[in-house]
Length: 259
View (cartoon, rainbow, N blue to C red):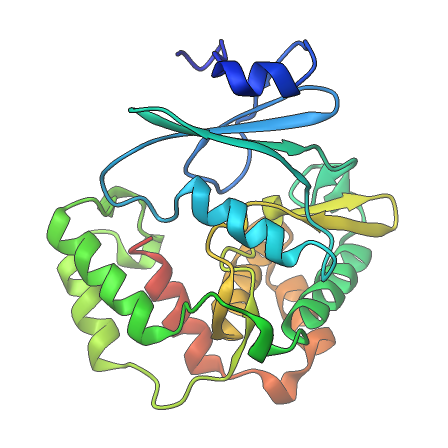
C-alpha cells in the first residue's frame, strides 16, 4: 500500500461503495487517512506502541455517538499487518483550514462551546480511563521503547531527550486532576466546522477520562499557532477562566511531547 493508493480488505470492499479515494495530509492522527466524497478510511500498522489503535478509536466513536457529534463507524477490519477503520465523512472543513481561520472570533467561540459540551458529559458513564496514572505509564513505556519522536518536540524543548521530558513530568506532576470526558487530541484539525456550526469531532482514539487541561492545553497551543496568542487567550476566557490552571496548561503540553 502506498500513500497514493488504498487497498481495502474484502469485507470493507463489500460495505463501501466504489469511489475515488484521495490521501489526507492534514490532521493530527498517526494513521494513514483516505477520503472519498462520503467516507473516510484510516489505516494503521499493527504492533509497536502507537499513541492509540484504530480498535480503540472504534470503541470510543461508538460510545460518543449520540452524546457529541462524531462520524459513524461503517466497518473495522484487521489483517496480520494492518488495522482498517471505515467511517462516514463529516461535511465541512477542519478548524485549521484557511477558510475557517478567516473568522477567528467565531472559530474560538465554537471551539470553546464544543469543548465545554464534551467536558460536561457524565464521567460515571465513560469507560475509558486516560488519567495520569494510566497516561504516565504509557509515556514511560514509549520512552523505554524508543518510539518518541524527539525531533518533533516544541521549539522550547528542542535538544531535550524523551527521558528528560518524562523526568520533568514526574517531578512536576499535579497533585489533583480535574477529571472530565476529554477528546484527548483537541487540536484544530480534529474539529470539523460546517458554516457557523461545529459538525463534529474526529481522531478520538485518545478520548476518555482525564484532566480537562489535557484538552485545553492542546487547543490553546493550536490556536496560538494558527491564529495567534490573542485568540488562544480569548478561547480560555470563553471556556471559563475560573476553570483554567496555567501550570496545568504547561504540564499537559509537556505530556503531549511523549505522544
